[in-house]
Length: 189
Length: 190
Image (cartoon, rainbow over all chains, first blue to last red):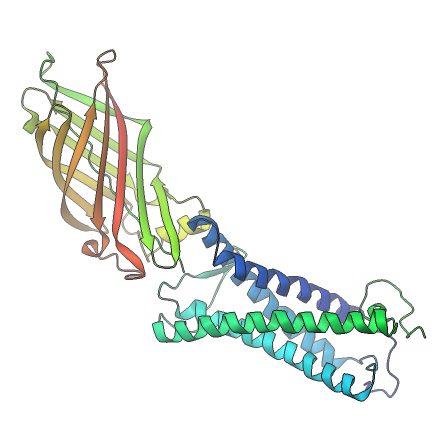
């Protein structure tokens, strides 16, 4: 809904850029998280953990920027019947919440790990720790981090499936609202 | 989280003492860096075995073939030269969590006695100093001498060190207290 009374035809440019950047970063985080805990030798794993943690910090920054633009700017009108709008609102809110939760739990897990390894974000600067080594906290945080990560991946899949449904089944031109370029924006009925 | 540890060791090499048919009494041997590798390996729970190597070191070997017990070995290994195949990982190992290389730049081994066990094996006892802590270390060293190249000696040794003895506690017990050392060296008569 737009605050100004008239809903724009499409999302603002910063919102679009941030959305797709977040999608890439979150996908990379989930993929890295899955792979780095199962494969690779010790040295490669170490580097991948650092990369995963760096991407986590980036995802946190992206999330903050997205929330800023999302609630500061106007949003295109939601599509579909009321139940779909309600479902979309819930899923969108849950995507934000789970992203934040997954990042914070990962941060907590990294901080409380039995061997706390400093997080050097993209090799540039040290990221602070929330606490010292604590086995109980680590056990909880690492499990919860994994579960929220998987939950986020499933929710993102649902979100993508719903967008595809609007685009391919309902033919509402939903992608042009969140795509780069100068698409028509308005639903093409 | 990772694990690893390391340190090293250096140690050992030794002495050769063997080969008493040699005419020289006491000979000095220079370590050939290209033929010398000081490697270590550490296990951890939920993490693959970490293997690494110390790239910079100095070693001196003095061999008395007639009196093997008079032979001496010393190694000085540069802690900051640790290399596990990832620069960020190696940097972490150099940090205060493990090698504390700024404060303890070298890991030293100095022999205190050398005992001939067989024609190809010597037992080198000495002191290993790591993180400023000195503890005894006994290493059995295989000595290889190629008859065609009497001015060359090759050694190899395997041993392990309990890192907790040196106050290197990080990550224990997730990261094993035992650190395997694998030292191979070649020396040339000076």
